[in-house]
Length: 319
Image (cartoon, rainbow, N blue to C red):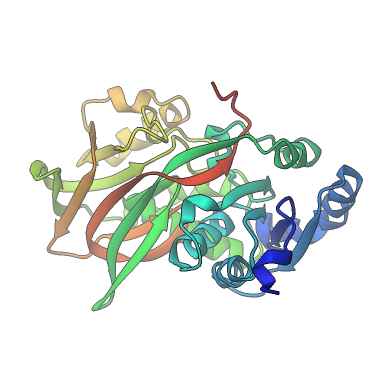
């Protein structure tokens, strides 16, 4: 008998990142494991052992027949797992259901989909299995001279946003982190950053040419531990939402940083918003990239939207 046939349709693969939330994954796993057992959720558990391991785990277990995958981790582990879903060849990605038990420091993707940070409530969502077909972004970029592709399900950031994300990730790797880490690096990195001249093209139309401070391309609304970077984003409308910060006084950035938490920063004169399906970013100097908080490579970039291509467990009330 083919091994695909013997996986019960209600059984979940649970990918656990023990390092999520600055080792919170290790500390809280006994509690989470007991809650899963008490809830009667059929499952098989696999722990990640290295960077991007969740990607390989997802590919392997989808090939074995698993169609329900939950991540006990943060946004980075979700991104790795989702990349496994989109690079595997066994089934169309939309046939996989992806859920989350939030253990990370930011858990920003969860905020859009009303997934509780309470472990018991998050597990109940897996049992109810209400799903939503969300859009996915595909970004083409470079690592030195090598062309690369990465999928993302929340927000990709360029320029200053990528610098802050990289510093935050380095801090996490050293065992230091928390909800305020990202905010700390927003301020502490300001005076070492240089504006980069860039051209931004959306759906074959140049929308910006000049000195770029930072730019976010979003499917969902939040990053940085609850900052509403792209407040108009709709996760299934087939369009990216773009927030672009032009050259501005760095003191202005400090003055108005609080507006990132309610999305009113987009009303400022040095910030523009756009929407589109294909986004190209070119520059003479390299612009760095992060996607779902994962530090990647550099420009030039091409973003494509894959509409309603990822089936996720949601806490939203679905129609």
